Amino acid sequence: DVVLTQTPVSLSVTLGDQASISCRSSQSLEYSDGYTYLEWYLQKPGQSPQLLIYEVSNRFSGVPDRFIGSGSGTDFTLKISRVEPEDLGVYYCFQATHDPLTFGSGTKLEIK
Amino acid sequence: EVQLQESGPGLVKPSQSLSLTCSVTGYSITSNYWGWIRKFPGNKMEWMGYISYSGSTSYNPSLKSRISITRDTSKNQFFLQLNSVTTEDTATYYCATYTEAFAYWGQGTLVTVSS
Picture 1 (cartoon, rainbow over the protein chains, first blue to last red):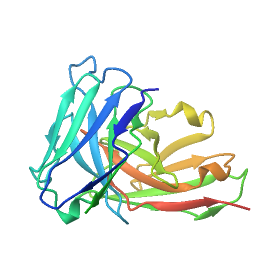
Picture 2 (picture 1 turned 135 degrees about the vertical axis):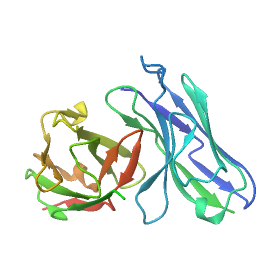
Picture 3 (picture 1 turned 90 degrees about the horizontal axis):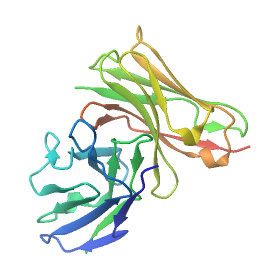
Picture 4 (picture 1 turned 90 degrees about the vertical axis):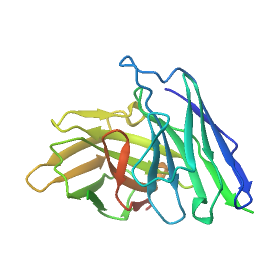
């Protein structure tokens, strides 16, 4: 199975500052069709997970441009610029390139 | 807008079967992929499997032969059955639909396995 290693495990950020989360894969996530199926989700307290980013860097409808996904191959990053109170929760990376599909272990973002 | 809602028993005894229903409105399950995902106590998330627009299925091998995902297109519902459950299957279970990603999720249902 593909292992996605997320760092850090937790992150405490001052409002208005930038946060950065890393997701490293145990193998390349580029599929044979040339696409890379790496996604980012946020689970806010008491809510279902919500899609932020798909195919490494595409923001889902309604996601603020403060959320920026980047990376390729095995190394990926989610940056959140100008952190706001509603950004708190647990962030997950997820890969849909290889079966079985797998999640990262999660990064908890707290507001200082 | 696509809406999904899970339903089913919140308590299941060990060795029995867990059965959940995902009711979908706003989109036909004969399009896209429709999956089950669970979140264990703590943060661990696990993709369990999906049923496609054509009715084909794919399962996480970690669940071996315990899992079955089926559908009723006339009711626009799909189902999860997990057999021979143990306390380690205690989790919040989500249904979701996959197009370019898991864009829409149900609210989740907590299933506790306990005698």
